[in-house]
Length: 545
Image (cartoon, rainbow, N blue to C red):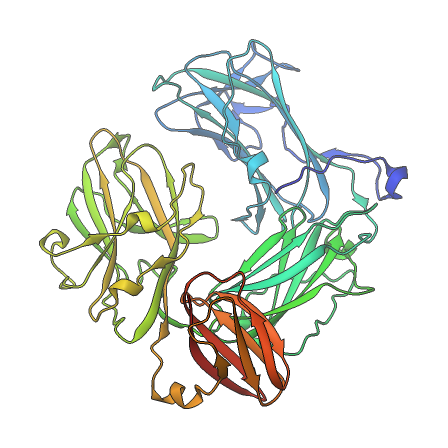
């Protein structure tokens, strides 16, 4: 959950002021200077903007923004943003026209790439309402980790399909008092690392105390022994998500309370530490004393069958256009790439049928197969559908082959371009050689939603073969089990229980001899039991009745 951090008195927290005088970072924020009647000085984008001298909040001029068939922008990029510093963001707007609506649509940025921080405040789901008085947007936010720019943008929209309405803006301001905050009082609590297949989810509860953090530095290692090298005050640690040297680092804003590392190495132990900090740049102040929160997790022993993030076009997935001029394509927003399809073009909707189809996959050697992805959508139109086929020929019209719909097995985006994880779509019942997945997009001349998909991952657990059976010497009973099992171990060991998606359910340490393990929280079904002892791994199947 995002949190808005408002100014606190200097005495309360012992803040040290560098300058003591605020400065407005917005160039020509009062809109008093114009190059001509449609170009406010210092602004980068000014679609449908005109100089206004009657509807004015202060001074001689404001900006009039006229609505059109698509959204129009007034935007200015502000550099010299310092991560961890507080900024007071204000502008005034007036909307008393039923043919126009407005809202802020701004971003923190790092080197031109959008950051997700404070999305609910800077990119709200609601629009303005008719009001004869000037309204104010007024909020104080802390620049998130890695931010060095801010895009101050407002937009105007048509209302009820009517265009030609006007909203007015004046007195844009983004101010900071350049204060330096002391070291965070405390570490976050409840820091945990939990494996979910080949992803690891980190979660914690925000640090509290007299001085709350600006953000957190998370350091990760591909090791079995714990231990993270602490950062040094005054030297910011940049984001590094390349595991090739077995170490990574990522900065997370205060208020997020979670982070997920995705597509990690299967059956690999990872260790993580979290360090809160205040300020940024040369003034960054990490908390490193005392007991640093730390936790480890091991990814499931799964095989990646197909993975596609659309960083190189549509990658291994193939578009198949059955009807209409619009097609699936690679798209980019900020620093994220994905596959996108929309039947909307040049102000109109068009009828389309377009498929995005996976390569042929051999799933016959797997006992469990899971498909996961994320989706995003906006505008009215048909839902995106998900199908599988075992007789597609890899080239023809998909309608000439047998496709089974499994759309309802996944969770989908709820609109407004919100990215939603699909959850685990089980393909275990359909495993075969020559297996295809496909997204099917349809639109009409009256309605055409935009759909985006990303992070496609098909993963599986291999059938237990001869080589694994040789290791299948875990001595345990009963099997099938009901409420417990007893494991006999020749030495101290670690036992993990996985469901058939590869998700770990139990992780217990056992000792030499007999060990009673309750299964009170385990539902009926088939599971994988894995025991590690003295560098050896033993695997067996467990049925719970």
